[in-house]
Amino acid sequence: MKKIGLAAVGSYVPEEKLTNGDLEKMVDTSDEWITSRTGIKERRIAPNHMHASDLAAKAAADCLAQTSTRHHPQLLIAATSTAEKNVPNQASIIAQKLNLSPLAAFDLNAACSGLVYALAVGWSLMQTQGYDHTLITAGEKLSRFVDYKDRATCVLFGDAGAALLLSADEPEHEILTVELGADPSGADLVVMGGMGDEFYFRQDGRNVFKFAVEKMGSLIDLLKARLGLKDDDRYFIIPHQANSRILEAVARNKRIPEERFISNIAKYGNTSAASIGLALKEAWAEQRFTKGDYLFLIGFGGGLSWAAAAIRW
Ligand code: UT7
Image 1 (cartoon, rainbow, N blue to C red):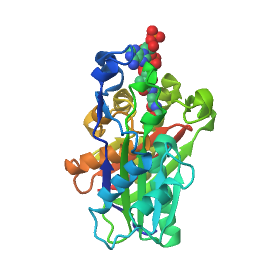
Image 2 (spheres, rainbow, N blue to C red; image 1 turned 180 degrees about the horizontal axis):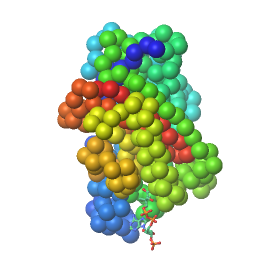
Image 3 (cartoon, rainbow, N blue to C red; image 1 turned 180 degrees about the vertical axis):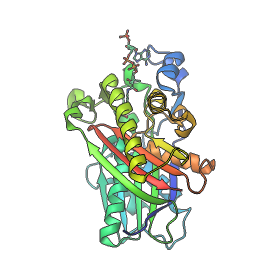
């Protein structure tokens, strides 16, 4: 198997903040409820003229700026569930903006699992198609699909972009294994972007919460077993940032110290596919990881879908 590593991570968030205090003026809610139930304090909202593809392109530019020009991507997979158009796909818009050609480019929608799903697909195509560099993006403008009159959902989401560059060229931070899955019996539990009353984001929060806790726990067990990790191996979990109580529950169930879960949900809320990239970029910049650590990227969400990847730092 060809060795493939994570060469760089990029991110972008719009400037405008929407705080819990702002939301208190819009719907019947409180900073206390939002903080204690979700861990979120504020989120970023993109202006009208800024689309999901712009968020992804800015994150991709940030990512590519950290690597040498020989890292020209031959494949671009754009993970999104909030693309502003069906055609052209978001991947082509990003490639056009950043002048990335020739390359293969397509979109992938696996809701909040999208970034890790795309990483797994990119990694697999690199094994079979000979690509040496692959760009994975996640651009999400959730604010377009949020009903700001619905207190149950409007407190949860923010807009952001993230990008990963995978490289087979002297790979560092090697991707060791990936795992993908879906449980379509739960397909109606998270709905967004449809016709009529299915346009705004709606979910069965309690059942999705239960699914997320169980699935993240079982994926951690699966990755540890597959890699043969021992108790003294140090691993970090970079989970989809949906609710800090989900992470607390997994930490409790699996007896994992909470500091092993990377979280920045307080600042950005749930940014769907972008959230794992955003958290990874911040933790990398803060030098939270040392050589030999294991990183478990774990996404879950609509579909119901899940995706996990293990990386050796
Ligand atoms: O990224 C996609 C994947 N999604 C997830 O992973 C989300 C998983 N689910 C969750 O994170 C949680 O279920 C939520 C944060 C969405 C909701 O938290 P919850 O503890 O499950 O609350 P709930 O929906 O059961 O509502 C509890 C109460 C209700 O009032 P009653 O019926 O008990 O009187 C709600 O009306 O809280 C009320 N409520 C609010 N109150 C103040 C709901 N939203 C709010 C609000 N402010 N914003």
